[in-house]
Image (spheres, rainbow over the protein chains, first blue to last red):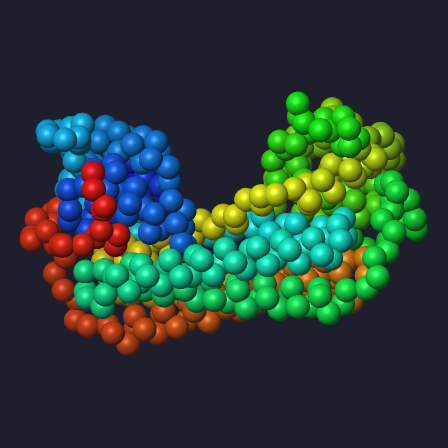
Length: 219
Length: 219
């Protein structure tokens, strides 16, 4: 039993929503009545340092939030498009969003770095391929940085979007640092490039190395 | 029908393995015969920029890899512990790992930043709380940086673990840049700290702001 009844917080079941639900709920705390479509536009902003859920996930979370009384909705007729449903946060929803921010522990950020994972196994391919992978990644980082810079400028310096703006600056710093490092790695690989050595023909069978990336502590 | 039969690559079905399977397969390309336990030790390295799969996931991937002929295993009796099963990569496994590195497109890295997500909704709490969240995160980054620095040193400067070492340096740069930015953000919040304003009592009902973080394009 949690202390939710004493504090007037929403019941325990709402405490186990995924972060995507809180992202959707949080976007509604800026005070607007928004459609799922609007929320997707707003959430695309988040992709720079979080992750932009798919339309289908946003709608699924909205249904769940509504079933728990954290948002309400109304159908709005439109003349040239299908009717749309607009969502608004409730008192309970606002309390739940605040509770989420107060709650510890905060799970650590998750980074699944598909590019670093490939570099880790760089012995399986040629340096040229790794340099291509890194250069392609650098180009996509530059693109992301340009997009995020435009978003940051669009947020302005007012009070209402002060925190999204801070996150935007965080994201800009992240892309910039990543770009610097990726370029340095590509340069290092290019500088060390030697005449290609014959690739091993089968499973490595030479002398067993003494230590792995982390020497196993036992067996 | 892929061209796998012409090239001698493994059949199409193996092309859709998750990255975790490739992480496990890749660790076996360093040439050692490893147990699931050993692999978990090695995989903990990957957690710095990818993610360390749970024991159960490693065993599940090993079973899948073995079913596809990408690894083989043998049971080794032990006197003071339960018997252990050692895994070794096959020719087909090595070909598949190489094929994975050659294949385009490479999916973009995924960052689910639980801390930035909370900062984004900073208007829902007090600056003190946000500063605590950022300081706690900075402490965990320092811890990760120290651990990764030890791992990097342990890898040495030899040829065998050259690529894990480069990834280690990439991770160190990432943690360092993140730490710098998080400290800057905490400082900014502390500097701007003003007398607390009354929190809104319910769903915001004031004048609708003209623009969201991304002004919706329609809908």
